[in-house]
Image (cartoon, rainbow, N blue to C red; front, top):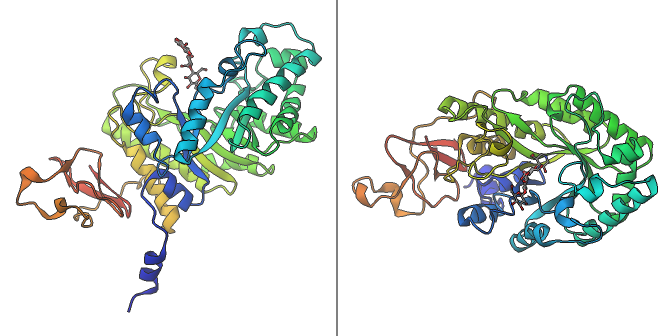
Length: 413
Ligand code: G3I
């Protein structure tokens, strides 16, 4: 007779070991990625991974919905770049976060250098929101209504045309106008360095309270998560920062996660530390009721904004530049799988579980043919070599061995 556990496993819906499937199974709404509009049509490997809904359940345009892309001249709207993400998401059945409305950067000079009264700039923001948010109405799970309104030291508001024209009144004004433009999307404040729970986090709490005190609608705060290997806060410190906002009745999400090495090339130990840092970030979201999902700011080290901004730094993502899964991919998969299956959460130092027994037999002939090595497909270092649903190679190139990391994922290490 079958045990209850065996029957439950048989009856459970099929799920892959890919990140979005595991994230949903673990209780999140999505695991997503930014889409680079300049890469999607020129790199087929990039397009294939990005389009796999089991891996990424949600997309965000890296640049295509920003003000300089959508309204480069006053009243001239252009959706060519933003529609790349919208059409890709639609085709693949993926969700979308939309980014971003009121931001000092990638703001065309007709706005940033204009001479405005409160009324005239209100009209400009309203027209921009009505058009752009109207164009994507019904497609955006959330919109970043205001982006990066706080200075890096956390002690003051960032100088920009909006602050100069309205003072801090532009916070509530923007959320009110956004609600009118699309009443059904979630309205977010989005910023970086909130993860450290220091002055900048305090300021963001203050901003949320100002918006709420003005009676304006705000639904969420996005923690961008542009972090540094080895300097990322612990899982519980991160959860504490997130929970300052859920305590105000908001949801939270990691919206632009990447964790860069401050010098390159990264050693294997730095790659393992990066994996633990990613696991801690994702784990903190799992530990926070009201944390809805995690979005990485790109997924392959082949394409990232970081080297342009921080020369000599980078390799901040979960696939290397040859599209091999890195330890970071595996550690995220492990922490999600632990939550999804109710297994005890992996501690930051034991994310990788090394088991040297062979992987489960796959449906391919490759699993049992050690006598004919020349015909056996082998997997490269870091590649997947087993797990529930896996039908690819189950043997690793020498000297790597196939090691179980969780029920869904065995890796050549
Ligand atoms: O579109 C022009 C193109 O016409 C021109 O030929 C080319 C020459 O350099 O530049 C192109 O514009 C670039 C744009 O990305 C699109 O590729 C800009 O120079 C470049 O500065 C811009 O960088 C983006 C950056 O935001 C700008 O602030 C990055 O791709 C994007 O990843 C980054 O994303 C931001 C988030 O929106 C907000 N949070 C921080 C995050 C990282 O900086």
